[in-house]
Length: 184
Ligand SMILES: CSCCC(=O)C(=O)COP(=O)(O)O
Ligand SMILES: [Zn+2]
Image (cartoon, rainbow, N blue to C red; front, side, top):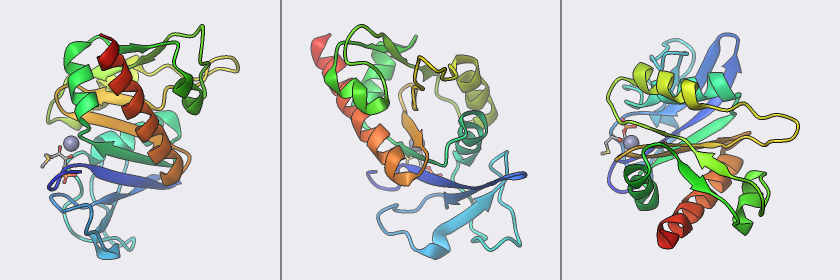
């Protein structure tokens, strides 16, 4: 998260949807508890529920959509170079296969084609959220979820049951993207 890049969220409740999200424009390596904003399903700040009154992340709306659609307990967004490069190179989705680390995302190391979806960048989080929803593939009993989304020429979101698992998914996906780029 160079400079003020990136943002994080934790899902606090689902009915109504509430997320704790980082405030906008801050160095995420220097956050304190007073830099956390509570937002609704549109990523708008909610007052009176204990959070900061600072402006929520400009990308809070996409965090909220990811939480609503996937059931994620936490999400992390960074501007990892491999994600920016891969999203530019494969705007239709990044195909990963035959890589041991896919097991860390719940997929098979061999014989499975895993596609990391890519959506175009933009400033309207409803547009990004709609593009995400169109591409999101719900997990089934036999096929695991792909817990990551690339925003082309911008960065990557990864999510999980909690922040720790979201970080694992993020780190694994970044490493897998580095390998995919090195194979191309
Ligand atoms: C300085 S990076 C540009 C904004 C961005 O993409 C980002 O991830 C950080 O935005 P936020 O509003 O969450 O600080
Ligand atoms: Zn960003």
